[in-house]
Image (tube, rainbow, N blue to C red; front, side, top):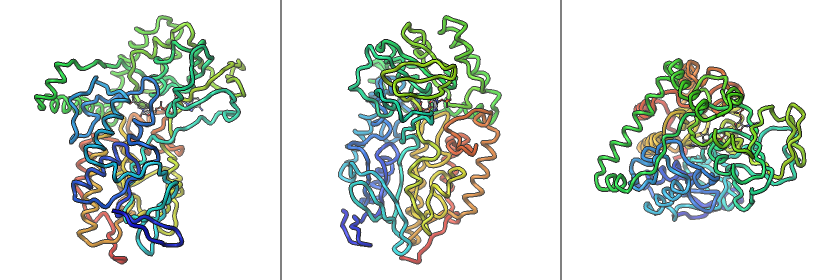
Length: 497
Ligand code: NAP
């Protein structure tokens, strides 16, 4: 498929389309290209197998909090999901089976980490430098993942800790926690899943909470053999279930975006959850957030509060002053001696490091263009970066439903643009600046009235305060806006053809 040539003293492998990543986004895009009859594409993957987030996040208890029958490709249903909420190994296997079914592995270059992508004006191609070789591509489609770069906390002395330490996204399964003094920093979606799984092991488990989250009960259960049989042999039942989950999730938009006061209904359920599960009323205030439900991601768990009450577990809420060689010191000057720190401190969501690697027209660096907050048109294209597309770019993440739906929407949208570029015989396609600006002004206006703007810090927000991660509406509206493809929104340039 690919051949090599020499340009600017480097050896490039030529490929028409270069996809970054093999999570839902990268695999979904590749399948769409095959469906369009396009075979000349290459996928680069930094790891040695496919799976993206569901390959990397293999901490104990890792699972998705969107039900399995919705959190999967519409064109690759799976009647065999073991439970309502899919667990990490099942999702990883699912993505591997998708890669195998569509024979995608022959397109994938494993152990190829993206280092730089630079638009070459003269050839109207992207020159892509990776850890294991360079590519020259007409189009680059990045499915790099919105939550793929683990983040360590900006705590004084964090680099000085001499004990064992790892991030939830790089779990060290070889390190025995049994009998150790272990700290967990962070109480987000990842920590509330792994803490209950490990809580019984350490001699002492200290959980450092900066902000409590709103947590509601998790309606999880295994699917019975009978249910799986029905899903397999009467596919309409599976389709109806998917539609039901989808519709239920969409109703949350009413509270999150349109009428944030509705979110108070969830507050009642979340407060009851604390009071039912936590025996000591003195703990209730520590576990009750001071921001509206939904401002930060609503978490689902039945075993987080019970884990906090185990005799060897301590919830530390005084705030961390510094990390020393063998301890964490809190703001009340108490020194917590430790053998191990587990960082459940999330990811670079805004300020994604990939933006520092991408150079568009006139050598402009995407991280500079985005220094006041990321923005794109329909979360996919950025003015000044011709022939470059993001899947799950700015303002595409959801606070209420399945990202796979959004990914499928974007894959369709990108395929429409690729077809149009070919129909117009265009060397490059690029969104118009005014179109991008008008779109983002509209989004920010809607976001300003949403629950996410009601006064909390979250990874949904850039440090400037702008909400750059979330799509502010129904997912079907996102699909409708994408389907209303208007070629006048883009500059199709034939100059280099
Ligand atoms: P996160 O939600 O960003 O949580 C990070 C945690 O670390 C927060 O509790 C945060 O406290 C704390 N933290 C960060 N810096 C700190 C510092 N300097 N000092 C003290 N504490 C600090 O990260 P995550 O739990 O990995 O989850 C990220 C996202 O991944 C989720 O929101 C979700 O979208 C996705 N995810 C989904 C699932 C699922 O489907 N079930 C599971 C895991 C992850 P503050 O709150 O005070 O900032």
